[in-house]
Length: 386
Ligand code: SAH
Image 1 (cartoon, rainbow, N blue to C red):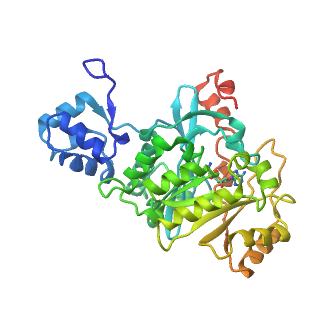
Image 2: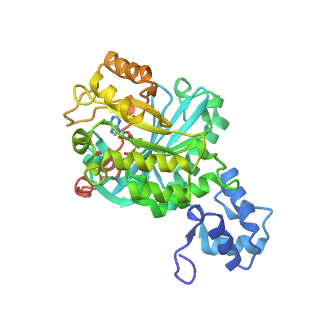
Image 3: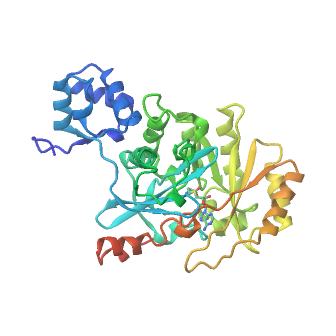
């Protein structure tokens, strides 16, 4: 709170124009916002006192009216394969997760957009948790800010008696966030109002300065919002397709009953009209005996052939209580080959972070339990209901 009882503004939630306006209200020139962003995003600073090239008076006013506040970390787990998963606090009873996946040529941060999810896809553990609330822009941007800062510090501490066991510490080159994917908990397009300004900050030269190719938004298929996104922020688009026909997709991804496949694909091709030379990634979870037959692969190829599309096959990641099983590796490879033979680009997503439940679709299922343990708060287990 400020001295006047107004809540402090969290600068992590303000895209550049809003930050310029904010700095203007404090009596400074708008370009000061760029210097401020440089400190916040490039240098990972949250202390106004350290921002030495800003006038002392501005620093004092900032300290009285604003904060740079990322979500609180409840826990940080390291997988044997170098993947890390953070459990972050949304409020006293709720938590959400983000995952960093280091690879030799890139570092991908998978962030959440909501606490839980309302869409009820039958094979997703986040769905089991139900929906609690949208994350704010500051909480979305705060994830990237926090991860970048933590990873930088790991680099600084590597070799010294650090907090990361050496066997689990990725080499330096793998510690940078080169890509951000909105593939954590939640449906990003159901939180459009908070997600779009967050994308702006990720892309801004004075923010995280990521190229549009390196920021991917994944959606279960909210058609009207795909059109809106095309008009506002054309980051890379991934779509959770998971079935080649409406009957099966209605069962796996219930939003399909509202926006069937034909309508969804039309929105995807429209999205690409706006951005030359790119393609939509279609995610397809491989469920044993459900959507993994050669006939289904051919049906999928018919839908996508001739369009700028890639298919990313995701081996199903099981979670407690699920009725699905992962397709055998040979079946997944055959499915991929059926697509490739028909001229549709297809890859198999390598599963990462399974030992810490950080793999696709595993976020959230046990968050509530973990949060219960962490916070010792008996209310948590019943806090969210579908
Ligand atoms: N709500 C968005 C963002 C989530 S992205 C969306 O649906 O696209 C997470 C990806 O992992 C989605 O493609 C989702 O369908 C997939 N997924 C969900 N549960 C999974 C599971 N148990 N195993 C593998 N992939 C899963």
